[in-house]
Structure formats: C-alpha cells, structure tokens
Amino acid sequence: MSDKEIIPYRPGLEGVTAGVSAISDVIAAENRLIYRGYDIRDLAKHCSFEEVAYLVLYGQLPTRAQLEAFNAALIADRELPVEVYNVLHALPKESNLMAALQAGVATLGMMDPHADDHSHEANLRKAIRLTASMATLVANGYRILHGQDPIKPNPNLGHAANFLYMLTGHAPEPLRAEVMNLTFILYTEHGYNASTFTARVIASTLADIYSAVVGAIGALRGSLHGGANEAAMEAMLDIGTPERAEPWVMEKLAQKARIMGFGHREYKTGDIRAVILKDYVRRVAEHTGRTDLYQIQETMERVMQREKNLFPNVDFPAAAIYYMMDIPIPLYTPIFAAARIVGWSAHIIEQHDNNRLIRPRSDYNGPRDLPFTPIEQRG
Ligand SMILES: CC(C)(COP(=O)(O)OP(=O)(O)OC[C@H]1O[C@@H](n2cnc3c(N)ncnc32)[C@H](O)[C@@H]1OP(=O)(O)O)[C@@H](O)C(=O)NCCC(=O)NCCS
Image (cartoon, rainbow, N blue to C red; front, top):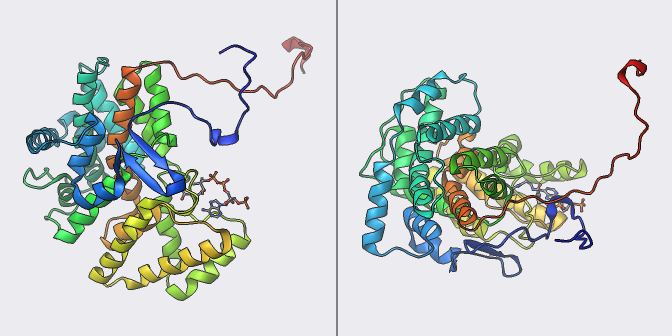
C-alpha cells in the first residue's frame, strides 16, 4: 500500500475488513450465522459438536466413517500429559482458570516436538489434540485448583457429555448432555472476533499454534468478550428475584452502566445463537425448577429492548443454562474457550496456509519536534 492511500481510522476497527476467510460468516442484516456455508440453525438442530468441529476444521461435513475416525482421534487425545498435570498442581490455588488454561496450553506447546511445523497437516493434527485437551484442561484444571483429584476422561461418552462427566464424576442426564453439546456448537466459531483476530495476528508472525491460542485465551477473558457470560450471571444473581429485574436494569441504565450479555458489535437486531438457546433456557428451567431465572431473563430482555433496542447475545442464555446445570461460574468463560478452540485453530491454519504478516498502522497523535534536554539538565 502506498503512503498516499489513506484508509480512515475507525475506533475499535468497527466495520473495517481486516482479512478474508472461508470459515464462517455473520450475516447481521439477516440475523444469520454460517459455518463453512451451513446455517447454524441446521447445525444446532442436527449435529454433534464433533461433527461441527470436523466441518470447521476440514471445511466439509464428515461422512460417517470420517466422523468415526475423528471421534476416535479426539478420544485418544483427551488425557493430558503428566507434565501438564504437574504444572496445574503447581499453580497458586486462587489462580484464574483462564490463566491456568494459558499455562496448560503453553506446556502442551513446549512438549510438542512439531510445534514449529506450520504445514496444513501438522497444524490439523495439533488442532485435534488441542480440541480434545482443552475440555480436559478446563474440567480437571478447575478440579485441581479446587483441591480435587482430576477425573480420567470417559471414552464411552461424546465430547460434551464427557466434559460434564469430568466435572462431576458421573455421566450426565440426556438433557444436560444435549444442552452442553448445543452451547459448544454455538460457541465454536464467530469470524474475526477479538480473540480470533488475536490468534491470527500471532500466527501471522509465523509463531506456532500454541502461542496463538495462549494469546487468544487472554483476549477471550475480558468482560466485553468471553468474560461476559460470567458477568451476566453475576448480574442475574444480584437481581435475585423476577420482580427486581426491571428496577435493577433501569437503575443500571440510569447510571450508564453496561448490562453484560446484551449488545453485539455485529448483530444489531439480535444474536441468532441467543435465539436458538432461549428455548433451552425455558426447558432447563422447567427441568431444574428454576423458572425464576427464566423470568428474570424474560424481564431483562423486554426492558433492554424497550429502553435501548438492545438484544441478548449468546452469553446471556448460556450463563443461565450453565448456572441451572450447577456449573460453577468461573467455568463459563473457560467453557467458551473449550469450544472456540476449534474456530481459533481453523483460523490459525487458514492464516499459516496463506500467510501475510498482520501489521496495521496507527495515526500518531503525540507531540513532535520537542527540543531534547540532556538528563543532567532535567532536574
Ligand atoms: C459487545 C459490545 C462491546 C459491542 O459494543 P459496540 O459495537 O462497540 O457498541 P457500542 O459500545 O458502540 O454501543 C452502542 C450504544 O449501545 C450501548 N450499549 C451497548 N451495549 C450495551 C450494554 N450491554 N448495556 C448497555 N448499553 C449498551 C452503548 O452504551 C451505546 O450507547 P450510546 O450510543 O447511548 O452511548 C457491547 O454491546 C457491550 O459492551 N456488551 C456487553 C458485553 C457483552 O455482552 N459482550 C459479549 C459480546 S458477544
């Protein structure tokens, strides 16, 4: 690009195209999301997380035989190396689980002799291992930080059900496994969001997939991105009862506070993932006897739409669902990471396959031409 081509600066890079990708598309005007050409509503209705992970990583839906081989590869990679457990045991008990995930992924990278092989095939193998490992890192990382023994993955369960098994030690009932599978699918991929963009920037320096994922986990942690599901749940707990939902939201809006779990940089008329999950919030609420939480959500949604024309994003229903499934709040954003590892990996592979260093420019708005004063004369 020549110096004369001035592309205007947009705060937050809003609306700026920063790359080309064949992995997913947010068609905000139609409130649609597609992964590799397939509508998320079809994938959510018909697929296992593993099937969607295959699609996102390989670019096409698997045949039955391909899916079986993929499942077997994931199951074989579920258990973590002892070195990773040693690191998890050595961490301070009060560590944030997202930071523990970063330590775990960095350790996996240090143990991989092929970490610096950026070929498509090597990256795919690493992506599968990372997808399998991340769920175990989240579940057993949480257990270890809370003084509990890790649980061995159960090879007879699917990815989402096994994740719940590792958290609790018993196989989940069907509705819980179904809902966890669904949230994993909905969290799998979402274009050039902050964490994925972070991963691509890191990968574009020809750093390895593990380094890029460690960076992505850091970006996901903040409350404007993945951290919103935990913050949304804290808000619902602060509200407490359905009657308090409307005055609580009104008070926060009067204070110009952000209500976590609402709004989206891309979707301005609703997040299709939240629409898909809403029905499950009701089902899980009825199943667990927590219809109060469903009512709190209904009221918050109504008031936010009325007052700000803002709609819930995926984190809002996901938070309530996890809470009703007795999943501790500090696990919500790590669960998001355990699903998004697939999207991150697909983007890192796409970046490495056709790389160009990502290096934008900034407009300098500091002083120029200051007279230099030697340190002896600066007082
Ligand atoms: C996601 C988010 C960062 C996108 O923000 P954005 O595209 O930069 O939108 P803006 O910050 O420009 O917001 C536009 C307007 O809506 C308001 N707004 C946006 N999200 C809001 C929210 N969650 N609560 C209250 N007001 C909100 C802004 O204050 C702003 O109002 P104003 O024009 O009166 O100042 C933003 O909606 C947000 O902070 N949401 C809460 C965090 C969250 O749930 N993140 C997960 C995203 S999947």
